[in-house]
Length: 309
Image (tube, rainbow, N blue to C red; front, side, top):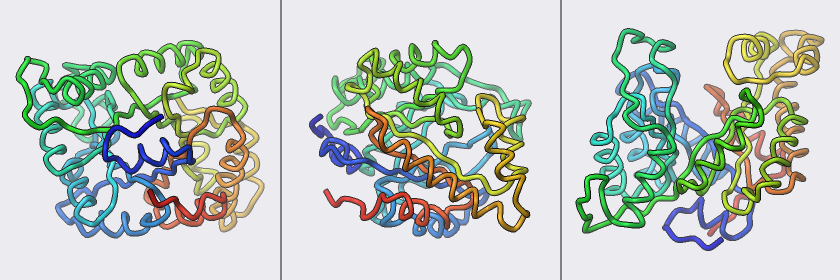
């Protein structure tokens, strides 16, 4: 793999190094200092920082503005963009805006349905899906044209990413969905939170059987569990999540004041075990509203120091 854009994340992967990405949720206000505080906790411990795009359909400060703020802080942002709220005109417009600030990473998502958020009566859009959004970014970058045919004088230079959930049903279809994204132009993939290691290893074997690990960089996603209550909520209430009973029992066996530390230990153990999986190119750490723990996870998992490229 040879880096073709100015993306730091792409350069690290092209150099054959394990990449580490983190995540920041923008505030539900105009106070950008909250975002800055979260991002500074990740500084030096991750190679790039995802900024979520109104996750779970809850209104937050927009991902594009937040990414610009991170860029101005000297950090490497990954612009998350969902097709839920924008048609192809707005999507391309936001991509041009991001490129004008030299934002070089984008993660293309369909987005959670609005019925799960704080405006359930709002109109959805879904003019494009995530695969078509990937194709759109690739066309703008490689062909220098908008979907309508207009030629761009300055093209976006973006490293294109997508998401994958290895735990969706039917299980076999998840790899076919990944293959579609790779054909569309995805260059890196961040997965859903992984708790069931054996099922994830099976999924990676299916990925290798199709040779997809040679065509796209897969980053395994992790969210540390703060408590047995969180584990049970993820197990029973979050669609597409696979939390084994044994993991829940492990946390339940401890006093409440010991469960958070055990959740960190579990996350570190899982990362260390998956380092040995062929075809895995890095890790995506989603310490949701717990960003202060991300440096500890990265250090204990043996992922420091981060490469300078």
